[in-house]
Image (tube, rainbow, N blue to C red):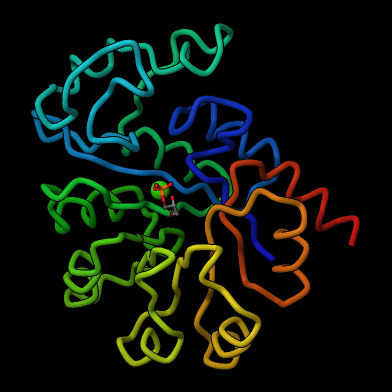
Length: 236
Ligand code: G3P
Ligand code: CA
């Protein structure tokens, strides 16, 4: 079972920062998951919310701040004083880092104003087509990426209530689904395995969930704590 570090190893370091991505690598995660928005000057940046106040000392909407303004914000102190000085990274910076490792990257498209062509170009420029998965709750973004047949794997994100079955995903040409943990059942997982549709549920942090999903043969989990998940799996 592959272990994807949700917003990096976000149980150990501030989410969506280089510190969290390096921690994920140190904890032997197979991949990192991250969220992207577009800044006012067009830079694709790595941050979960569409505003900066929850994770930095600043205020305002990401789409209305230039990258120059965003990179002056402290994205570490809210998590802990020892992370003071962590910045909001650009996607390009993170791709540079991931390329230097053996990890994969799961880019979750959050911002509605992101151009699929620009995103693909950036992934191509970093020679990361085969190691990238693009996911989104907005399945339209994924359909556009499928239409250009870029070679990047796309994966629809499902909520607990808005669910795509493995059969539906297969019929729509999706090789993977990123479902909400609570929407899963042993039958659903079995069917996905039979169809060859990869399942990467989120956000799997509880010991009993990690072990149950492992026993059922789930392809991967998305977790805040790759170190803990790895230990649980190794003890089984
Ligand atoms: O990719 C799974 C998960 O990240 C989706 O929810 O809110 O953590 O981005 P969220
Ligand atoms: Ca996410």
